[in-house]
Amino acid sequence: MDKDFDYKDIMIPADIEKKSFEIITNELGDRTFDPEIDPVVKRVIHATADFDYADNLSFSEHAVRKMQNAIRNGASIVTDTNMAKAGINKKKLAEFGGEVYCFMADSDVAEEAKKRSITRAAVSMEKAAGLGKNIIFVSGNAPTALMKIYELLTENKLIADSNITDGRSIVSGIIAVPVGFVHVVEAKELILETKVPHIVARGRKGGSNVAAAIVNAILYSM
Image 1 (cartoon, rainbow, N blue to C red):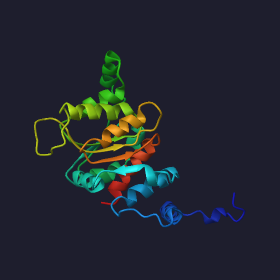
Image 2: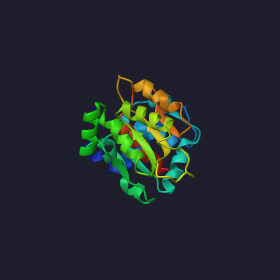
Image 3: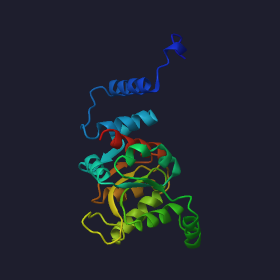
């Protein structure tokens, strides 16, 4: 511990966050980002203390702006973990008419997953496809969620065209940041192939905290 540290120097939360972002900006040095993605990159670094995210976050063209427009039009969020759901600022999202859903603990999802011997994350994405809503998918844990989203898009059970109103859910964005070793990299690369606005943490790194940080950065910069 710094010998000059004094507990009287502890700041209020808002000041701590402000100071943290100042440190992040300083440590990035000459490294700068497009103003649209800058808040996302820095909030993820803030959530993880990991500067690798300055390099491994991949954004499709104007992904942040497009997701913000979807949120303004009432888009909801579907996550693959209740941890990510807990970390997302639901009050801020609700200002625009959106909700956050996570079906991982639903009994019907668990039953269907067991019957078909597939993951609850995959079944959760199927359930989301039947909501008939405008959705931003947020994955911080399960690569099988991303694989299922890709499959549903390929089979036209999810659509990326907001002009179609036939009961299928519309995918307005995908935040693909699961962490892990098995199929994680491959699942993320699938999302990079889609035409849906996306933010992907390439490689093995990610997590529910990263997923929530990205969503909050998008919300706070609106």
